[in-house]
Length: 489
Image 1 (cartoon, one colour):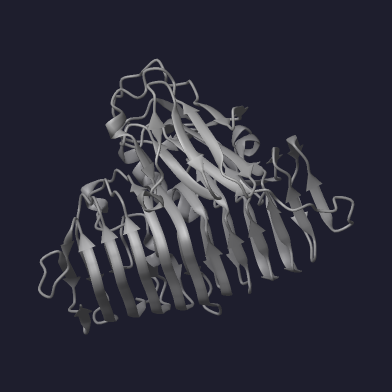
Image 2: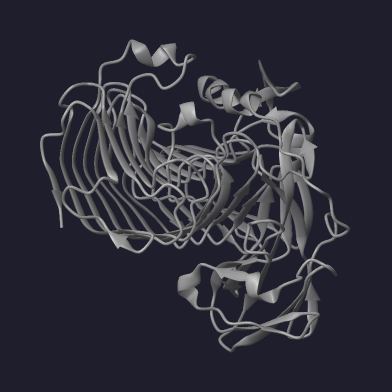
């Protein structure tokens, strides 16, 4: 993990935040009402190298907000009052994902939206990603017996706890209105992030050698206490588990990986909301795991989103699905295979995924480092039988290509630990029905430094800024050795 942290630190030190003119509403939250009852609007940050309004623990950020609530089987009326002066031109307001077709009315003071069903969406008030309101709508959670010996129950209110350790057949339940703030043990190892010293801590929630563990409920877990105490740690870490379920909860303000599922089987991650503005806030990572799915999730993070790895030569990552998920990247990757692959990855699919915004600001030398759709296997393993289908990228405000398939060992000077590894073999990749609506760099890049290690790639119905990818298209850029088989339909 320390190597990953230092890898990303190069980007942080390479840039200073661009000057941004502050406004009177910078620190004022939205007011939100559900059927005339005011509900809590939480304040947070998003990583922002372009237009940062402040620095938090050395990281350039701008304001971000979110609210979460539950509805029953009947529709509800949501009213949102932005801070005065925020909306100067209502025509610039965008509600994402666009595919939801959410309509609003504006009377000059508040937005009104009819909520018909559980869903996750964003009010992009100015159409530029600044000052967003992220809205998470759940169904009412069924009752649970909080007196059951296998239930760890947190009711409404703030709960300051230590590390949470879950064992077989236990359920961690967060009632609506519960805010759980773990403070995990700090280790002896330190890391310095833009002048701030952190201890590398144990995971906030840990599950090891356990089966049928459940984490669920309409409450939230936040890393704010850990961050304040300079402890950098993963939120949820599951190792050698079977039948793990994580449902409906919100993970807020992470400073490390959010959900890391390692050497496990039959995991389900469903309707989990993830927010992280700090370094290494990867959303959901299946690492050496099998027969698992992440679905209906939302992530707004400062690193990789829906990813797979195989860090150990002896492990295999197989039969993993990501379905019906939403991602907003301020840095990193929307979805794909990310770096550490010394084992084998086979049979992974991403289907019905929407990238609502992709906003990384990177140096041109870092062009081949990340992308909304990204396959970069480093470590000498094999990657095969991957599919990306029905993917929509609404906006990519970055010089990075829309799709990147990369077989390099070393991207930047500090990655010496990769140079000792063999090249990876990457084959049988399918991209179907991929649509980029507003893409700054409408390109697909394939880079094979290893010499014939990438093979059998198909592109079907790929559209970038309204133009379909065709055979001989200049937007398909092949670097390094020739790829053996590429089919374009």
